[in-house]
Length: 135
Image (tube, rainbow, N blue to C red; front, top):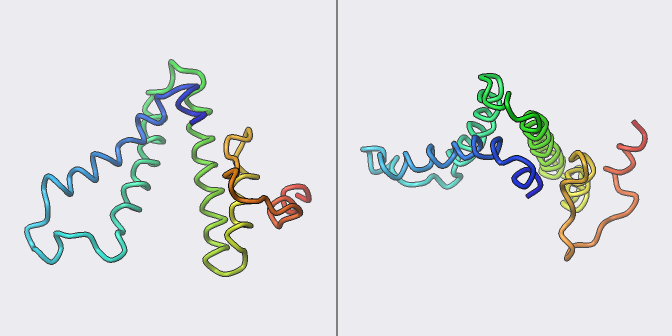
């Protein structure tokens, strides 16, 4: 991963999600109905959101101050997640295909840090590239 190679500190703070997930294993809910995973495991999404928030909290608390690239990398990772989310929202609303959603993710992630899986073809002239070039 590009971020880890350049500065691992922001991703270390993102690993907060594993503390949250481990809490579920170590201290399960006393009620057996609530102990297991739900059909849609909302807690994993919550853990990802908390991990992203932890990156921001640590940045504003000064953890990245001695590392000049950490702040930049944290913002790039945030933009990467936002680009992925925008594509997913349009795809889930059936406004885009998954291929087009992937184009948004690849196109809008800064510095070319996200690339398409070499096994999947790239749709040239897609919605993502048209939007990016026009505005």
